[in-house]
Image 1 (cartoon, helix red, strand yellow):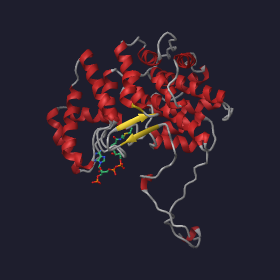
Image 2: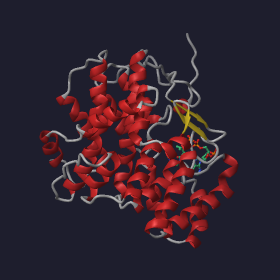
Image 3: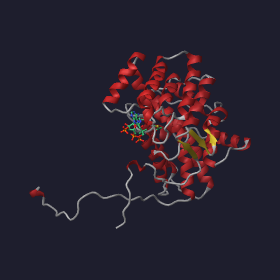
Image 4: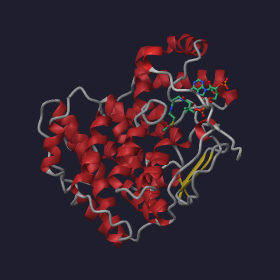
Length: 378
Ligand code: ACO
């Protein structure tokens, strides 16, 4: 009998070979296709970064122009998808609405021409273009409003903020939002990416790949943590309450949301960039007491848990930035999905290039040779 080792959470087990992104968790380094995240956050745009991740190299200016043009002109969603979304309960979570809407795209584009580069390009463009529209449409419809049409004269991030609020955003706000999308676009073999690759390995359509990844991203131990960070900051309420609150959490062995990471044992480089973005926003639009509480939390958590390698992760400061941009808390994770669809699509393409269906094994720890008991004897 073959003996195999069981690693809970598959910790340390390579599930794929990938050239898309790299994390050095000891040094706090994140690279997309070899380029440091700090450099991309400073110099790139979300769509350029998406191109880099999905096609493997930075686009020329012609390639970028064409890609931006395609995405810009595929932003509208089919009226039948909009009508379907109107039937969703307004009390439902926007991540569930997004998962259902992404899956519904597969009904309209059910052809699976996975060896055809035109099919791949169309699917990439359609998903990048329509996911923000679906998130914004659900937000307006659950408030009883009609969704607004995307505006072709606005770039990717400005258009999304416009569709959410029906107001043209401040350029700094739009740029900061675009950087947030860059920071969340890809992050090696995390739970949702693994889910995307498993689904991709069955050779299903890319809409099912993205829908399964959206479902996985929604949990509070993954993308859902940024919502809980804001709730926690509200609950703490004051700088004076930070220490007693954290001491209580540690005593109850409760996890402190926005801290800790399977790979990073130092501060997540994305958290450092997000903290800087939060400061830029507060400098322009006024300060926020939750930011001061967050900084104090970081200080106390480092004191108490730094020896275990527990530092802020990407979710700790992202919520503060989104809240300052006026985005409702339960849209934080769908916004994460808007960005991460890039990474999922890059992994979809990479999986298809050298596919073998995922079929791991298990360590059976149940019973054997048990006789069936008749129902009247149980
Ligand atoms: N608060 C308090 N203690 C923590 C935290 C935390 N946030 N994270 C880890 N620890 C402690 C654990 O209690 C454990 O201590 P022990 O060795 O004394 O038992 C040790 O650090 C190792 O923790 P694990 O849970 O084994 O680490 P794992 O790699 O399985 O979990 C995870 C990583 C899920 C991110 C965890 O740190 C966590 O739950 N954090 C809070 C939720 C969160 O912020 N998630 C977002 C992650 S980023 C992302 O997905 C985009």
